[in-house]
Length: 303
Image (cartoon, rainbow, N blue to C red; front, side):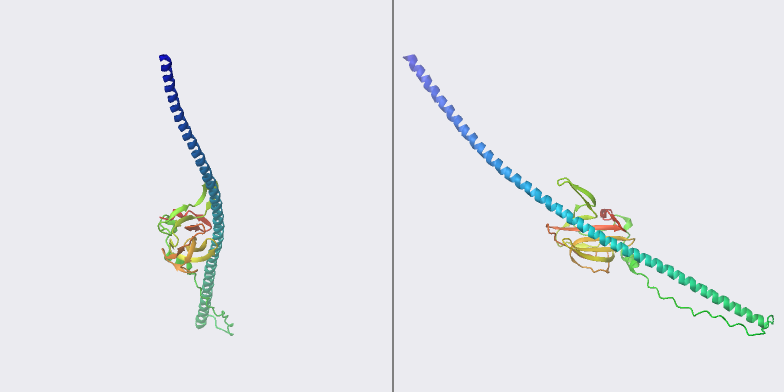
């Protein structure tokens, strides 16, 4: 009986211990189930967020692609303006060359007429002297003198003052890294030349640099010169092109309000206008440097 009682007590103790272990495991399983449910909910949330991010990335990629397309359109239009301006410069230079050649021809003809008149007068003087000395007495009337037509005054030549005026107000571009920036405290967000967007796998080519600035930032000329073009481009605002010596041109695009007019002679650091707000947000000033028909890296000329 004592052995049975002892065995019964041990069994009861083991049963109580088993119940405690079972209860603890049951609590652990409930906790694990709750954690699994929480992980599942978080996974779903992350999947939703990831899906939104992918959609945003696609939207962003489409927006960037559209912006790049518009930038290419703007650059082509600017290129057409540059080529037209360079054609005008070449015509001016050719006209000046022809005018100089005509002026030289008129001067040469005038010298010839003066020389012929001098020779005629000298021959007449020698004939009169010979008659006085009796060397060749005149027996008949001398032939009538041939008179040259009256010398016409050459038409006044009005020189082209553009180059001299530009030389007076502009610096020598060929010095390099000597020009001030067109804006203050900007950030270059797109450089000159070709660049690869690794995220979007897009290669783009820029004829200049894009400088991110606050909306309404003053934009100033990097050097003196002549404003040869003020044009408006949809989506990209106003474009100002300034002519400098040696066929250099500078381009300022994405301007809102413009403070200069076509044909105006301007000095260095003169206000051209203010940066315009972009449809995509923010404000970006596009700046280019051309020598003839060849685009240059603007940062080689900027301090």
